[in-house]
Image 1 (tube, rainbow, N blue to C red):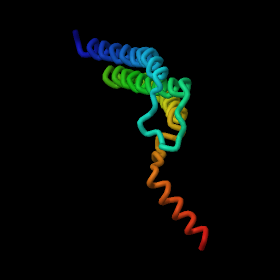
Image 2: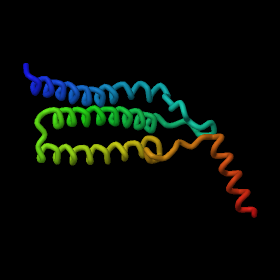
Image 3: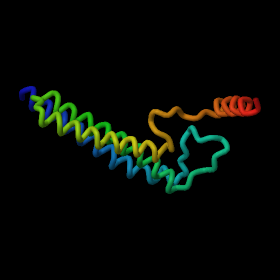
Length: 137
């Protein structure tokens, strides 16, 4: 076996892993959602999520991880094996599409963009006090 065949095999295994993560995640998410899975960082004053919403979040996380593995497989195959302008261009389009999907899923799951900081309970109170103090002056 030469280097190119090894890289192709690694790429296929990564593709398989990406699809497997999505399929297994979809199946495993069902009992977790039915048992009332809730994210660990759920604010204290927030009400519990429905089974549907919980399943959507779990499924979205599985899809995100699977997409990451599929992108890694594409990069391995394109860069490690003789890269051409055409293969790099196709890779760029695939990565753009998958990045858009990842951002959309992240927004659906968390309600914020990936680059936005997670709101904290202590920080929100301090910023609220600062805003009210500024508005009073």
